[in-house]
Length: 120
Image 1 (cartoon, one colour):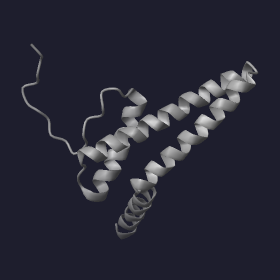
Image 2 (spheres, one colour):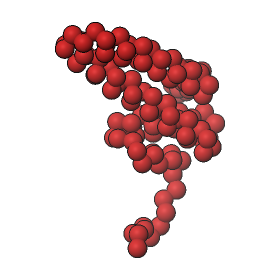
Image 3 (cartoon, one colour):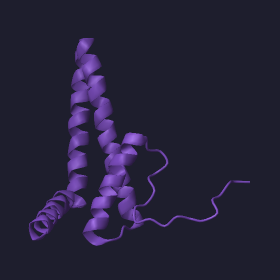
Image 4 (cartoon, helix red, strand yellow):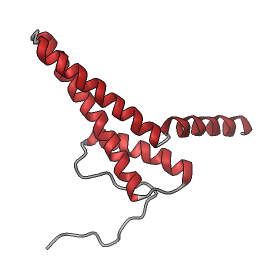
C-alpha cells in the first residue's frame, strides 16, 4: 500500500516532474514562478512544454561536456557530430522559448518589478 500524507498541500507552483534532477527542478520552479506571475495559472500542456524546455537545456549541457572530452581526446568525428547536435538542440530550445513567449514575459516581469520599486 502506498504511503500518503494526511493533507494534500496546495501551492501555486506545481511539483516538478519525476525525472528531473535537483538542478532541473530549480530551473523548472523558476520558470513556473515566472509563468504564475505572468498569468496566475498553468495548464497541463504548459507544464509539459516547460519540462521539455528544461530537458533540452539539460541535453545541451551534457553534450557540451561530451564536446570538451572529445576535444581533449582529439576525436574530430565526434566533435563535428556533437557540434551539429548542440546547434540543433539550441535551435529547438530557442524556438520553444519563443513559442512560450518567455523572453517577452521575463522582460515584462522585470519592468513590473522596477515600476513597483520606483513607486515604493
